[in-house]
Image (cartoon, rainbow, N blue to C red):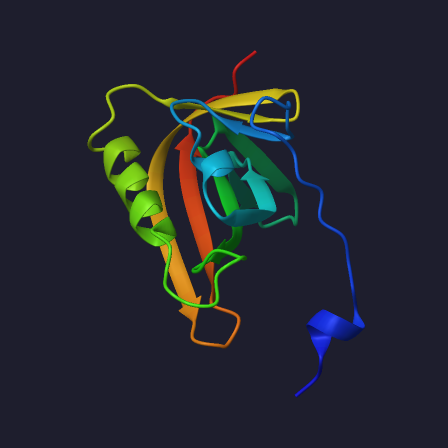
Length: 152
């Protein structure tokens, strides 16, 4: 097996909770108080369109406005604290509890999601964890939100 972690050393920047970051979620500090790294943020916006091809090979495009968009936040959870030789952290349990409190069914108001200077208001629709049973004790996670229109 390749020695990825020791031979290809990288760097990690640690910021404080009060330091403005690239990604912020309104309604809790779930992203800053967990043992996790955010590795991806994806925003999907789509137009509702219908295409029509005529018998004379002309194309018509009808636009019906913007479809609901999707924001996906992904990363890595550390299942044990870095300074621990064993045991487990409550990371998955805390993230699951945060999902239960903030998912679309339970939350009456949308969550504000700031990505840089862009702000979206969305509802939390999905939480997934994929634990890799390796000696590194890490798990991948994803949070998905649906938004209807970006904030101005």
